[in-house]
Every structure is written in structure tokens, then in C-alpha cells.
Image 1 (cartoon, rainbow, N blue to C red):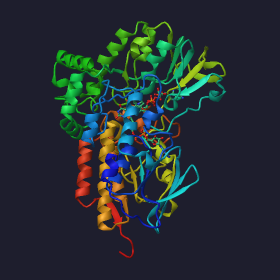
Image 2: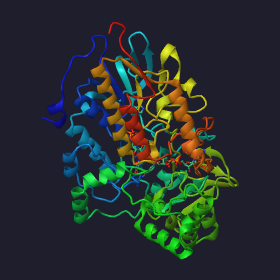
Image 3: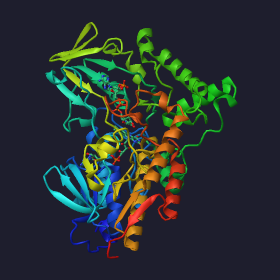
Length: 550
Ligand code: FAD
Ligand code: NAP
């Protein structure tokens, strides 16, 4: 018997409902939510668009896809047995291994029987009278549920930009986030890639090693940091397995859901030589630890510039052709405020004879033609074109569903000028809707398995509270939502984040999308404490209702 079925307590649900909770999505968030809620005796029905579990790790199969948070903490903490059972082969595991892990979790906790695959939730309408959601799926079926929990992903709604002639391309047209499941052999091919975000930065070195030639179409250069991926030694594996409780606690107590030592002081508290030594040390360690150098990197232009200068010098020293090197240096945003990719020989790749960088800010992509891309004066003949053009992030997957709250109000209308939420967990006027890592929660600025577990646990505790108190609906008050949204805006406005004007953090990558910084930047631990205080204070900021006859 699986661990899950052993602990589940079955209980009858309301006769008019098909289930207690509908969960949308079966990635890290959906899988954990299903497990947690069924373990507590809730009847759950989950829907997943894909043919299998895994979410991001099911869809993003491009060459080089792997995590940028180290695997020993980019993983679930909820089961000590699972933690001890799973060994990671690399410091940052690659997509196939992370997908295997999530498949193992689904199997170990017997979750797949509760998921309807290849079925998208297309709409959900709240019925005021029955305090229930009527959920419509792509197969035409309707599911009545008390609660609707979205675990649809911050980075799952794929962005295909509207470039003239894109559909006329007669070669293979690929997207990093919809990569085919079968092997894509790029050897000997003339490949083009549009985009230089985190996906492209991982894919470019791998594709360059296979293809006859690779043309990189770059609109905005990114600050790329070394990942320093390496096999996980048996000593390292023994270390993290022996220290999981402390590692997880450090994640919970940190600003980014990661077990890093926090910075000790500001960039100008130390001499130039000492500052350089700090950057050298963190650069050598690799990964996002670079941002633990100083306390004020995200607050002070001058401090941030010291980090930029360090990385700029590295780019200019690594890339041999000076023109190419200068094109690769970001000039439009401070370092760290747009999601920095981690590399595996990214800058070195531009020294290869078979790699060409096209700056599409000066050489605009005019047209995609059946046999290639016309940019500026030049035509680039291609066999394969890879779109590494990202996602309609944070709100995209939620708004792709036609969600209607009280009196038929549309969520898309409510968020016309940007998302408004209370804690990124709920939306006023949309009772019994919970959004795991929803807009205006720390989400993508935290290590996401940590953020996902914290949200799912909070939601589960809330549903248990409602069950014990005989409550049928919960929703944030307008005041709480307005105050949280204003607080989120205010916190970010005091930082350098808004300076990244092309960032998906604020919706800038999608033409016509309203601009609001969609992630809470006040820090994961402070946010978590606030969630705990809200619950401890009787779910302050939320309004409950009980059935009329109660
Ligand atoms: P997802 O994994 O996106 O899962 C959402 C699921 O919902 C998908 O399977 C989707 O098909 C399904 N879905 C969406 N809409 C519907 C619908 N209407 N009906 C039915 N199903 C639906 N974060 C980190 O913290 N560290 C990392 O190192 C890291 N690496 C990443 C690498 C890549 C390539 C990408 C794209 C993202 C990465 N992220 C990383 C962010 C990532 O989003 C999270 O780590 C995590 O995978 C989120 O899990 P999730 O379950 O919330 O969402
Ligand atoms: P992204 O960061 O949004 O990058 C998309 C790229 O495509 C950008 O360079 C963008 O340029 C470019 N682009 C978009 N439309 C274009 C157009 N019309 N013409 C030319 N260029 C265009 O997407 P992503 O690389 O898929 O990454 C998204 C997020 O997923 C990351 O930030 C990260 O959070 C996550 N991710 C994580 C990992 C990891 O942790 N290992 C790996 C991959 C992805 P502009 O910048 O000018 O818009």
C-alpha cells in the first residue's frame, strides 16, 4: 500500500458536489497539494493538460534544461522517507532526472489516480447559492467542487511572439517550453534561436556543440552567472541527507527560500580589494549565491554597479571578438533585477566558429521566411528555428481559464490593470479560490518547492479550519486585498527591480499586458511569518460564511 492511501481518512462529501477540491495542474505544486489534501481526508480531483505529471519538467525538454537552484533543496521537504530515498546525481539536476523524481513522487504517494490527464480546465464559475465552483474542462465535462486550487504554474503559459511570417517557416519550428518528447537531432543543421533568457542560455552551448552553425537572435542581453554544475559526490549526498532538517529550516528562514549564508554588510562597507575578493569567492562557488555578496545590491545603484562591473569585466575578458563581447553586455538593467540565467560555458560559446550573435535591436527581425530569418540587411538561412521566448508569466496560466466569481465577475476584468490579490493566495470576489504561488506572493523569487509547500500547507490548514467550524466559503476582504497589493507595490518601488523594464516580472515581455510587478519582493521568511500570523488571528483579512441553516 502507498504511503498516501495508508493515511487517508475517507469521509462522505456533500451530495451535490463531485469533490471537495479541484486542483489545476500536476507539477511540484499540484502534486503536493493533492497529496496533502487527500491525506487530510479531502476528496480531490486534479486536472492536468499534459499526458503526465511534472509540470515545467514535463514540458521543458530542451537540450541543457536543468534547475538553477541546487537539487538538494530544489526538492520536497514534506517526507523524510522520500528525502532519504532519493539521491541527486548532479549539483543541479537535469530535466530527465527532475521529471523522474516527480514521477516517483506521484507513484510513491499514489497520486495519479486522482489526476485526469490531457484535460485542461477551461472555465470555472462560482455559484453564490451553493458556495461551489462549476469547473469546465476541455473534454466538455463539468465538475462541481467546493474549492478551486490553481497550481497552474508561474511559468507554464507559453509565449509565441507575433513575428511576421513565423508560421511560414518550413523547417522545424521548436519552442523550448514545448520541446518534443522524442529526440531532436540537431547535428549538422543550421539552427537559429530567438531569445537569450534562462532557457536559451542553457540551450545555446548544447546546441552549438551539435549544430553545423547556430545563429543567436538577441534582443536584450542578460547578466549570466556561472552555475558550476558538477556530479554530486557520495560525501556531499551523505552530508545533505544527514542535515535535511537544518537545511529545510534555513530555507524557511531565508529571504529566498534557499539555505545560503546571508550577506554581512553593504558593498561600500568594505574596501575595493575586499569587495573584489567577495565577488571572486562567490563567482568561484557558482550559482545564485553571488547575490549574497552584499545587503544592498538590490537597493543601491552604486552598490549594484560594483557587481555589474565585476561581471562585465568577465564577459569582456571571455569573449574574444570585441564587437560580440560588447553586444553581450547588458546596459538596460542592473544585475539581478531581471531573472539572471546560470550558464554552462555560455560566454565561451560565442568564441566558437559556428556561432553568430545577431543583435535584433540594431538588426531588427523584419520577417521570418520559409527558409530562414531576415534581420536588418542580412538573411540567415536556417533548417531549424528554436523559440526561447518564454512565458506569459505569473498570471498567464490563471487567466487562460475563464474564471468568474461572485455575480459572474470575470477575473480577467478584475485584473485588467494588473493582478490584485491578498497574499497571492486569494482574490476578493472569488470565494473558495486559492492560488498556489499566485501573483503578489514571493513565488519565483523564492526557491519554488519551498514556496509551493508553504502555500499548500497554509491552504490545507485553512480548509481543515473551515471543515471543523462548519464554514462553507472564504474570501479576502476588499480592504485586505487593496492593502496587500499596495504594500507589494510599495516594497518593490523602493528597490531596483522596476529598473528592469523588459522583465517578465512586471509583464513587460507580453505586448499589451498590464504592468504590475507580480512578485512580492519583501522576502520569503517575512512573508511566511505574515501568513502564519493571519491564520493565528482567525484568518485576518478573510471573510467566511456558513450555510444559511447552520
Ligand atoms: P508548473 O511546474 O508550471 O506546473 C503547472 C502545471 O499546470 C503544468 O503541468 C500545466 O500543464 C498545468 N496546467 C496549467 N494550466 C492548466 C489548465 N488550465 N488545466 C490543466 N492543467 C493546467 N524555480 C526554482 O525555484 N528553481 C529552479 O531552478 C527553477 N528552474 C526552472 C527551470 C525552467 C526551465 C522553468 C521553465 C522554470 C523553472 N523554475 C525554477 C520555476 C518553476 O516554475 C518552478 O520551480 C516549479 O516547477 C513550479 O511548479 P508548479 O507546479 O507551480 O508549476
Ligand atoms: P525569458 O526569460 O522571458 O526570455 C525570453 C527571451 O526571448 C528574451 O531574451 C526575450 O527578449 C526574447 N524575446 C521574446 N520575444 C521576442 C521577440 N519578439 N523578438 C526577439 N526576442 C524576443 O524566457 P525563458 O528564457 O524561457 O525563461 C523564463 C523564466 O523561466 C526564467 O526567467 C526563469 O525564471 C525560468 N527558467 C529557469 C531556468 C532554471 O532555473 N534552470 C531555466 C529556464 C527558465 P527580451 O528580454 O528583450 O524580452
